[in-house]
Image (cartoon, rainbow, N blue to C red; front, side, top):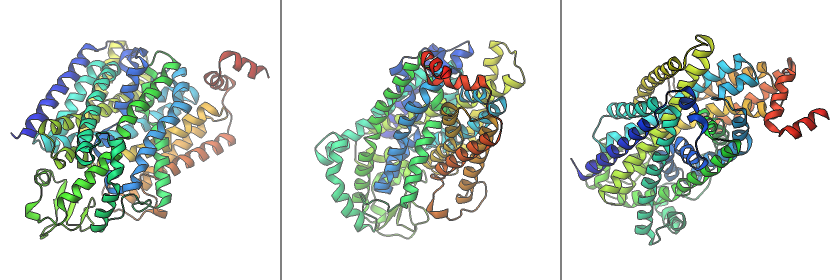
Amino acid sequence: MTDIQFWALFFVVLTFAVYIFIAWRSRVKETKGFFVAEQNIPSIANGAAVAADWMSAASFISMAGLIAFLGSDGSIYLMGWTGGYVLLALLLAPYLRKWGKFTVPEFVGDRYSETVRSVSALVAIIVSFTYVVGQMAGGGIVFSRFLNLETAGGVAVAAAVIFAYAVLGGMKGITWTQVAQYSVLIVAYLIPAFAVAQTMTGIPVPQISFGQILGELNAISAEFGLSQYTEAFTARPQLDVFLVTLSLMIGTAGLPHVIIRFYTTKTVRGARYSAFWALVFIGLLYTTAPAVGAFTKLNLLEGVQGVAANALPSWIQNWAATGLVTVSPGVETINTISNNATSGADLIVNNDILVLASPEIAGLPAPIVGLVAAGGLAAAMSTAAGLLLVISSSASHDLYFRYLDHNASESRRLLVSRIAMAAAVLVAIYFGINPPAFVAQVVAFAFGLAASTFFPILLLGIFWKRANAVGAVSGMVVGLVFTASYMIYTLPVFGTAANEHVLGISPEGIGAIGALVNAIVTVVVSLLTKPPSHEVQEMVEGIRYPSARRTETTSA
């Protein structure tokens, strides 16, 4: 066992033990504890849990790698994912918390109809499964590199631990586990970033110091035949940059596993403060990611430029064993580098390894490398647990109990919820081993599906009293079919051949157009059909205004 493997195993076993212990101490016996943590989570703790729930393997593992290869255009992930929380805090979270239900399908069921609730539950399952695939794949990458496990074995181990603490404590256990996981992932992300910044610039604050190396990075990128790192719209067309950013923003605001976290606070005010703290905690990582991307890209290019294929740095040989770094056959000297296997470059480096490999690339000590491995797993597992809870609650609370066993006892409800979670884990393991794309891209698809389904009907449901059930169902179905069809059309998934992007719009950006289609269909169909009842319209008024203002408005 190498030093890196020893320290990776040490930190992984230590953190896994902490997660299981927290879940055991937080175990629940009632559905309110299982689904919404008894609505008793302090705002700052809920903010940390929200940050961990949302900063997935894509944020920790893939995002800096994408920024490294996309350069300026990589800002779509920074602007989209953080901007989405502003939308969520202002437009959705406090109003949904005031409604006071367990799940997003419950809100739309009350607001629209039981049919909309059922469709919403099915869509929540689809979106969550798409998202959880990226987390399982990210966990498999960590295990395969640092612990010498096959990807399948790594995914299975991560899933088993997630299942253990999610089943024991439900939302309550997941929440406090996510607080611990946020602590692990942010420390694991910041320590190597500070160390690399100090080594490369003499200033240990990456957010400040990485600007010093951008000129050098532009120059060496040109030597490799790459676009200048700071030049905009070289990796993606301008239209696609706008659409991907918008899709990620409204997708963030519509993700069911993020929204459900705001049901766990004590008050509506607590929901708002949770969003504030989540942005603070997220900002620590998201202001560091561009620096990590720039530092790693420069270290990578300097370490391989003009180097003979048989004399490459040891980290390349280590990662080559995972299949995520490839030296093209017959190449004697590295002159070109890419993250695209079809580019014909001398060296192919997968986006998903750059953060995990950055300590090795920079020559940092083995304990830091091991800590980064534990951080990557914490990021993947925290989000996966939240997603599995959404799948479980949608399948059991919104479908099974609603239609098959409405009078089930508390113990039976918990049992069915845990069985639903076990089934979700098994499906997630399969797709985690066989993902349709790299981690951040899979996650972006989930955001696109959430954008084109949930966000429009939630927004219209809160701010437009005329929106009705027929319009909401029509909008969700059309938005889902439109967005999913384009993704399948432009990607080699489910045995289909990839096709050219229409007007340069990538599958990650189509969710924004899907949301517009959803909104238009919802509005048009609602106007052509019977309006909601007076009681429903009064309920909508009730979540937007205090009682005095509502009475005043109604009497007017």
